[in-house]
Image (cartoon, rainbow, N blue to C red; front, side, top):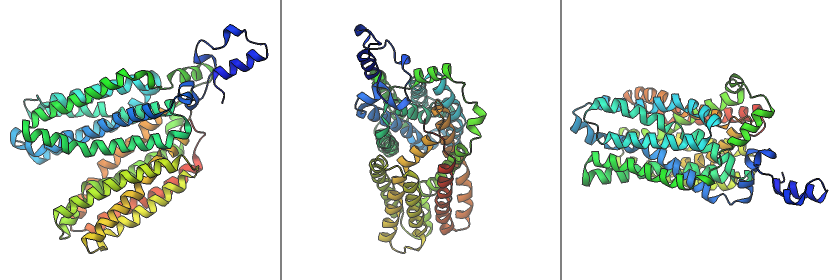
Length: 434
């Protein structure tokens, strides 16, 4: 679609616009799609992509910042493992409940404001954990951190959809996912390293300051971060808003939510329990750690490949289906691999295959999203990750108590196979892209 400048130039040539009126005073004079704004089409999107990828890294960094020092906190606070586990549960429950609310706020007030507010909230909560005098304070601070964490998915995708041209969205989503993976990887290295030298309290204070440093960077570059708010306001003036009920009861949106529930079951089965599974099967803990590392690094590599490929094809459902099929078969083969080398290969193949699906997955969600509802939809469907993360551990724990390690891997594989069916159905019910 031509930009406002070109519209004005064409009208001036036709004699319908005076020469001194060569540009409209505001973008609202010529409503344009979210992904075809003047800013996003004329500007190279690298800066926005890197900034939002960095913000997502902060989100995932705080997923693990406190849990990685649980062993040190246990001795210092004199609490049980169950009490420490409750803190992680409170974080994710608060995040899951508030993601949809955050999406509503993103659509109403703009993604930038909500992103900045959420980042300040989660960073401040983690920082205050370093000063918490007793366990009771953590029961307040961890849910607060979860509330702050809830804004990242709806806000991040709201900014990317509005700031990045459509031909770059696959790569943008890929960098966003890759940033989250890097945040997971950095948390144990940074926080545990600091705790070794300065103690766990100082480590959490510094971890909180990391978030504020990134927030400062985002504030200085906020002019780059389009959030589509002006376009949505213009759309609300010219067309009636889509009822919230119609969005949430849309078959495509409900299927997207189910997809994320299934993906979370797979991720929990592999990322949280793989070392334990291999130890129960008689392998060493070092192999379990190495296999998980191979899976995560291969997943990151697959995400990069998938991001580039997603921008070069319209068959995103095929990419997702093939990647999930290969990833599921590879992880199901782990109990029968027999040797350490084959286990490492199987996990690397599974990680790479699933990683290639992630950018295309986000594009499928976008294809199901009505115009002007990016925050609400992404906030709702991504809360499926929290729902799946709440369901899977109990089921997997029961299986492991009975020594059924192979069934755990088949559960993870089965979740991917079921996700293939939801992918096909999402395409069938999808709406026009936002």
